[in-house]
Image (tube, rainbow, N blue to C red; front, side, top):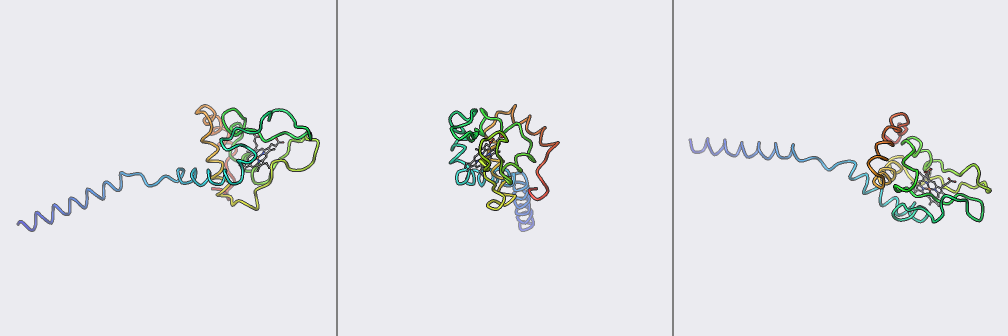
Length: 152
Ligand code: HEC
């Protein structure tokens, strides 16, 4: 009898810890993604876009060469106006303002340096720099223009 109730108690304990494990959220994928994205950002993007996504000074005007400087990615910029698909393309393929006086890609292409998942992670990190209104707007844009299949 003693043995049986002991066994039952052990059983209950096992059940309780199992239930606990179920209740504790698994390490969130987006948290891992943001941590990875921050490291990628610091290594590949911060030199131009600023360590906090503040962009270059006078980024709204062409520089002496007639090129648009790197814009901010934080709430003072306009990165948040683009859906996920567009952001992915900008980073993967690179970009230059069509009115730049030079023809080089001022925003370099990262398609051969970063994997699709790394591009997605760095975008996930940039998303932490926006206000909740900007994030809500960007989520709506992304419904129309999601990440390409290779980045999902
Ligand atoms: C050598 C400098 C340089 C580096 C490094 C760089 N960028 Fe850029 N980026 C630019 C410039 C310049 C522009 C603006 C191009 C234009 O509009 O003419 C730009 C534009 C962008 C835009 C478009 C923003 C908008 O609001 O239209 C995104 C998104 C972007 N960069 C993301 C990144 C990410 C992510 C990285 C790192 C993986 C990165 N950039 C690294 C220079 C750089």
